[in-house]
Length: 229
Image 1: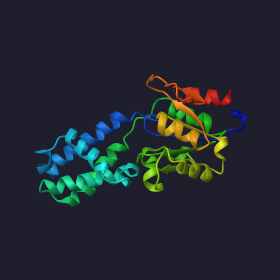
Image 2: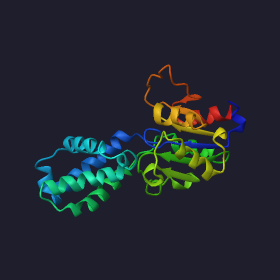
Image 3: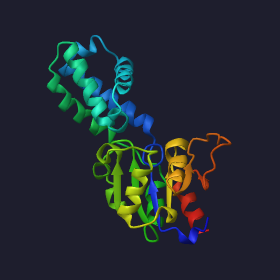
Image 4: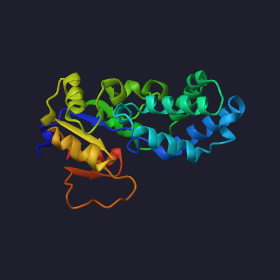
């Protein structure tokens, strides 16, 4: 690829700009503690693990839940509240507790310096299947556009969501790099949509033979050096 033609970089969020596992652990713990106070009938019969299993089962019942993870969690909470004799309307404040925890992320140390290196030279945006709120996190100002699957209506690896981001930035897919940690959703998905793809491998994972990212980076500083080289 000719990197001098690159005009834009799009980023995944979870496990690319921050680690998602501790965030979800925190959010689910805060939610469970809230349920203990406000919906004791649920916590008497359900654990965090069983609630997760119920969501996974519910996700298989409707394709929309593959796109809208907020709706999945809300629907699962509504059902479990009703089943255990609690007010289903508690799902709304419960989801606000979860969402606040979901947005209490800790950025990887390289993220802000890396974005500051890239922003003067390139258009920056995000495309995510999750429902992190960049405004609440404090990152929105670093990106010209941000597209989330639950708002857009399709999710990665559908080419449409990548193409929508390129159109919003006014940059052709061939002049755009997508950066993400998921080999199927991010790397193969972006490449199949006509973008270049960089695998953000922060956790020392092995690259399978059938996937050929345009580059492999372990942080945004390395990404910035690769784009400048």
